[in-house]
Image (cartoon, rainbow, N blue to C red; front, top):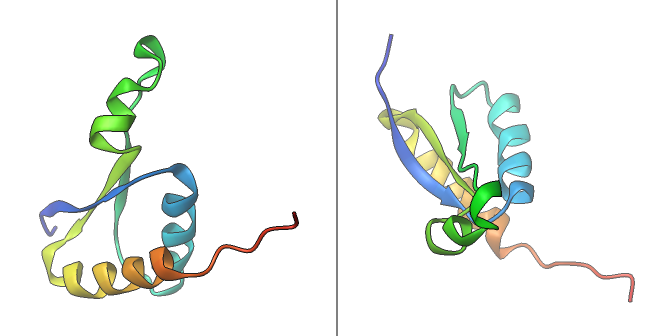
Length: 79
């Protein structure tokens, strides 16, 4: 079994969910670790992000490239 390493940090759960769908489609092994911070009212999330993604290092570049595309996507609004 390959060792997993920290690949990137999520700002929110929506980034995590979107990337998770892509990784499932590409059959890339991963783990999403959410930083639970209900007791401190979200302070840790502000400093360290919502959570992070771990995966085998050989997928690092591919995952980071996909994640960059996700962050650069325009946000549509109904307003």
